[in-house]
Image 1 (cartoon, helix red, strand yellow):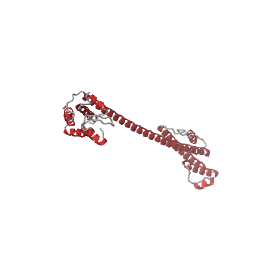
Image 2: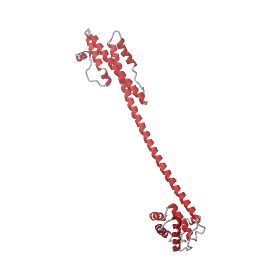
Image 3: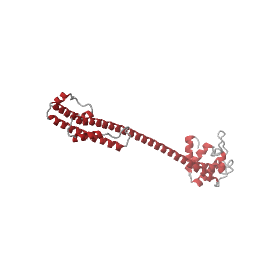
Length: 296
């Protein structure tokens, strides 16, 4: 019956193409039925119009509720939605109020409500899309800030590690210099023999009394200074300028151990042991470095 009446007034029964069209579909059906009945001059026309008004009011309530819901969501998100942050439902509310208060209900009143429902629904859909886009933009911004913060933290950690390494190196150098200086004022125990054998005897006695190093460390020291100078207190490297049993570079460094550094094997050994202790910890440590790099 209804479909026949729709055909009479020219209303298509095809499926709606949008949410806004679907929203007022049943209202339009009721209006079409009313129009057909009214043309026939029957009382049924007034009943169909009343039904259409009820449907239009229900559609309006849903549209207004959806508009208020999205407006609340936008306010809560507090984002830039690039335009209006709410949907104007004032005209629709007034039109719905008119349906319930008018003395003589007219089809135009119902049609007005249906049209305003479509408008509010379209604006609600538009605001919903703009909110979704704003949320995506905000998510991208937060992700970028997080990436930058992580990058800054990584760089800060690297800089801290580099600073700590530099401080440790500086402390080690300071310790080495301090060790060399402290040994310079210590009396030199010497056999008085500058020969390689006498120098080794002096070194053996000195390293045990000063550092507590035993035969294992002495063996490393013998190998190290055999390589450097053959335990010759007058050994001189013409290409580098290194001098003496420990091959100090320059040889004048050994003056911190005694003024006779050029002529005393014991003075040279005293300085050399202090240098090894400060830089490598032990003769075996120095010998290991020499084997790896060719120098100590």
